[in-house]
Image (cartoon, rainbow, N blue to C red; front, side, top):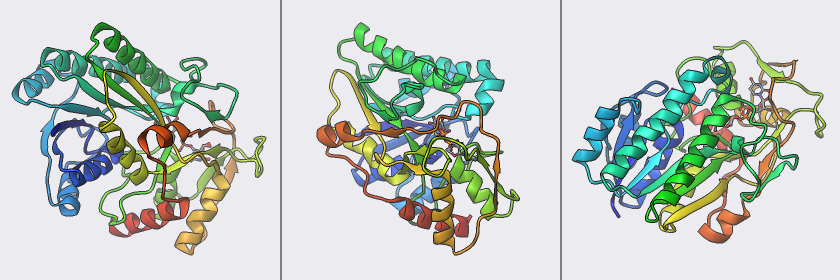
Length: 332
Ligand code: WQD
């Protein structure tokens, strides 16, 4: 298998995954609408990997354009990252999220079906577990209950659509990769998390505070039932996350494979601030603010299934991620 279509390939996780795919000799095309990324990422990918993906500026909601692309290219595999991912925004604009994420994916799947593309790896999220009560998430846990927002519901719905596609077509091969909290970037500092507009996630906000674009970080609550009162999350270096995608390709088979991609360790917001300060040698201004609606006190991966079945586990640390983040800040 050689030719891979990466949707959302100019984005944060997509671009890092392409770097790892190139190491394994895959031929790559990128489909992206550049809503939350920049085409210049392709230059950086070429600088790092010495190869440049073919790029198609296409929105997945444009069925005809997607169909035309899959008619012209025989893809062996689709890795599907493209989608809106701002949790707060999804609450304000649910229809935009359902149209982009769910309808866009249905367009993609219909075109794959029409042109005989039988393999897809889907960028899912730990959010699909909702609030299962136990903070250590395993793949056998029920999903789809008490989901906090439309963003999480789109990820859950797409997982269910993919499972139904497998029932309808016994040859269809699906992988659901449930990410925890991706951080860091490629050690070159050439690519990294650089969302357009106001970010939602902790690390891009820390980066904007470090750049002086935001005055101080608001810590959303320090009265949670955790050791230091701030929320605990499983932060995974995006390069480890990217390697997880490559590790699963050779294991694909008809049916659905589901893996958590996380470190299995939980880190608090205050610990993240301290780690950034240790790496930068500078204080990071922050204040404690009110809790954020929908935040859970704690969740982290049980990553043992991916280790057992894929031989994959995280190798990079929070300190590695902070070091690499600073390199990206220096260069961007
Ligand atoms: C992490 C911690 C905040 C910003 C979300 C999505 C999930 C996945 C990762 C895509 C929380 C705290 C944050 C700030 C803060 N995305 N925080 N001040 O909410 O764990 O997960 O992003 O797949 O699907 O749900 O990530 O980075 O938003 O927050 O104190 O300015 O940092 O309260 O405890 P989250 P996050």
